[in-house]
Image (cartoon, rainbow, N blue to C red; front, side, top):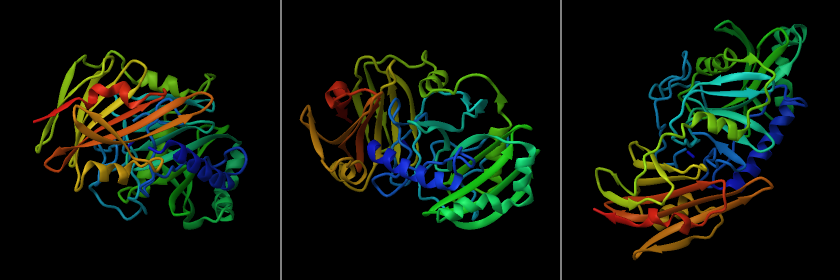
Length: 396
């Protein structure tokens, strides 16, 4: 889920600019950001503490799958195994982190929203929070102060919502209309914006404020009813507040239980084809193990939110080819030797006024068509040697 951070953010901002042409000044429709990965997919990047942060990641497998059954509270997104023709997508992998999380609270533009555990929340520098669901959707929304009379203009002529999208070159797929869902009148239309499937919406939070945004649809499994339920799930949780907007650090700190984590000095990650025993860098604690059809992974984190993911991934090729295909961030492939074993890796450092972030992906061959991968993601300037214990392995 879930990294070419500099490129991701630059392209994400370019898309934001295009969408701002649609929404106009003041964020009337909101901004949804897609950041494009180096393998041709669109990826939200796991960069906790850096420019683009998600609060939920897993590196992409050759056959992307959601890492948990994406059922949304109160009747949201349906099971991805149930096909739907209502969305034009399936091209995007959104990566997830796998913290022990609970539903979060996000204060945004004067309202406090309850974010279901099934949703991920990310933050982009200068552009604020966005919400996504693994392989399903991502959205950025706005709270708009407007009277009932102003909102009624859109009800009387829903096509007014489309004008800025059309002016920006968007192709209207489904014209603007209104639906009553869970007590909310939702005005919405669907458009293709430079290949992205956009579901633009507007509804009321109360008699003074509207809730508006753009959902980028990422999966063929998502029906229009699913999208409308996502909107009402968020809108129905909104409570007016005087609290300041939630920062990235506040949100992450609130949903992560810092008491979790098992102190270990070594661990073993196993698949049905091989097993790898590794050493653990001091200060990192074990946060869990996950698996899907093509991979298994162990999760480690320390008390400053440096994250290490250890993967066994099935791949039809060697470690060098895998790293070149998926993680050639800057066009340069590096090697790292540990106990006679060669790791192929790439690293990226993203420095801003606030952060000095690092992403390192390193892979080695583990036999039987499996790769062992170390994925370090941190808001600090770190080197591969800072977590070298994770490279000290024995293959059974």
